[in-house]
Each structure stands twice: as structure tokens, then as C-alpha cells.
Image 1 (cartoon, rainbow, N blue to C red):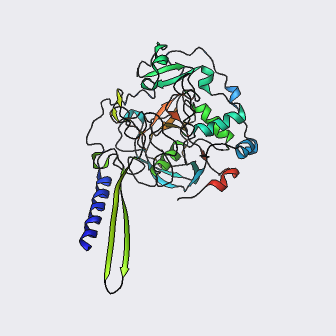
Image 2 (image 1 turned 120 degrees about the horizontal axis):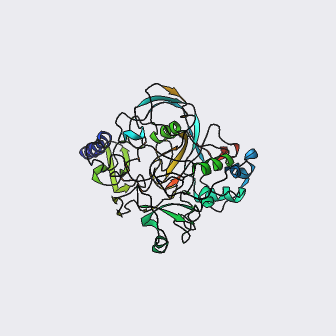
Image 3 (image 1 turned 60 degrees about the horizontal axis):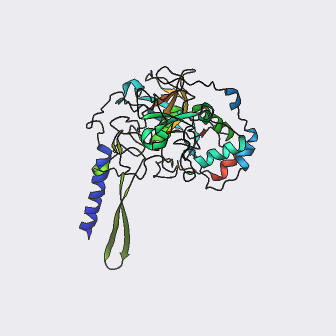
Length: 406
């Protein structure tokens, strides 16, 4: 019997050693060194893309959250996913000394110290965003512009037949008229069965407006990355270094072990291994990008915000699913000088987004890493772009729903 126990622990130890020692950089070189999935190319009012003829009036975007009365008292027919997790501040190494996309400013690794803060456990869902819209009458920028960007394979043939333009740098991204958060793949689509999925086609300005209404704010890039790492040092992903343990897309080999100890004249251990369970960790692209997505993780597009296991900080979907806006202006020049609560440059043209999305594949957009980053203009939107909120102090109306895992 003791030999069985020894073998069992050997298996578990071998698995953990493999997970921790995996060198993700040694194989499968990127097809494009610049990671040309096109996510950072889908911007409004740029020479690289077609021009928008409508000028957006940002003066209507001032949402007042007076005493958070609307956010505090609002009722929903859907399970609420607006709870926040307390993140204990501390020091961590931001960025990496092994950048995949040097031009993105992924490096160097640098010491950052953060104060305590709170972060949404989930990405903001369609249901939560609908509450905001119903309470305030808010109109998103995609609705005002009249279009947004969608990945080609998600569109119906009828919708595609009416499109004559594409993003030059990434022809799989198409501008779709009548596309917005309520119609994520164009006028013939809806979110009726996706209320628990992350809201998409959300610009940075839209995200800021929602956060203000909810008594929250967008996380800084440093806060986002610290939370993504979940207390792990210099790891690629929120759970470690290995995306594909045992050469599969599964993330964990879970053994259900029932151990009963009987102590009498003889000491014995009865161990029962029920079965192996394979569980996915993140919603990303499987197959050959951009032609074939096999959907091995169960989703071709977005997944529910509650899907997939959390990291050590009880945060869901920190990588994959949808890109998440941060508060920072884009900057690619960093030094090793230690900083405290960095907030990025004071001005810029693009805002930082983190985490990658369901369209990320290692061969094209290997940005579902904690240190990875990308950017878009504050008025840009797309079918894989959403957000989650942060808060320095927890809003009063959320205190009864919050828990501390740190």
C-alpha cells in the first residue's frame, strides 16, 4: 500500500515540476515577429484605416454617479457579477526581460510597488452593462459612429455580403454597420443568450463612463498586471509557465483522492483515485489562425465571464476571452528604476489594453501573457474588446458582496 502512495506522489511531483520548468520560448517561433493579429490596427480616424465621417461629441459622456444611488439600488433578473476582490498591495516585477514583442515595450523587468486596491472578479458582462445603460440612457461610441470591427468568421454570410472594406493590416477584421454591444456581429445578431458574456465593442471612453457610474475606475496597467500574476513571480501566465501540460490544451490534471485513515492495531491507508478531469484555463484560439478555430475550449467567440478557474487572487479570465482596457496612456520606453503606484504618461494617442482575447494564437498574437500589452485609440471598439473595473476604496454598496482571498 505504501508503494501505491509513493507512486502517486511521484506522479504529482513530476507534473508540478513539468509545469514550473517549461520553457515556452524554446519552440514554435512566431510566424510574425510583430504579432500581426491586427488588434492594434483597428482604430478610428487613422490613415491606415478607412475614415469615419461622423464626429463624436464627448460632452454627452459625463455620467454622474451621485452617491452611487443608481448602481446601489438597481435590480437585475440575472445573477450579479459586479463583486470585487481585495488585492493586497506589495512589490512585484512588472514586464519581462524575455520580451516576445520588443516593439510593444514588454521589457525590461522592473520593480513596482503598489498600494492596496480592489478589482472586479469578473469582466463586465452584458447584463451588468445593460443595467448601466438602462439607468443612464448612455449611448456607446460604436452606436454613435454607427459601426465597429468584427472578426470575419463570426459574421453571417448576409452581413459579409454588404461589406466592401477591411483593415489593410489585418483583412480578417471588417467594419460592420449597425454593430455594437447589443448586436456584436451586426444587425442580425443579439446578446439574448449571452447576457453572462463580457460586453464587447466598448471603447475606452465607454469603459470610463461605466466605471464612473459604478463608483469605480479603470485599473492602471501596473495594477492589472500585478493582479494577473496572482502572486507568482516572473511567470508567463496567471497560473504558471506552461500553457499545455502533457502536450494538450488542458491546464490541470486533477486527481480526486479520497483517503481514509484507520488507526488500530495496524496502520493502513485506503486511497481511491476516482478519475482524471481535464480543465481549460483560458479562452483563446485553437487551430490555425486565422483560418480555423477548432474551439477545443468550448467557445469560438466569447465565453461567460464566470467561466474557467480563477487565479490565486480569485480573478476570472485575466488572460483570453476579451482584451481589457487599462487607465494608462501607451508608452514603450521603460526603465529599471523602481516606481510606486505608476500611472503611465500624462498624455498620448493610445490607451493600453491587456490580457489578449479569444482570437489570440501563439503564431500571430501571443499576447495572452501577463507581461504582454497592446494599444488602441480611446474611441476604438471591436468584438474582442471589453474591460473590468478597479477601485481604490470599495464602494459602500458592494461591501456585503466582497471577499478577501489574499
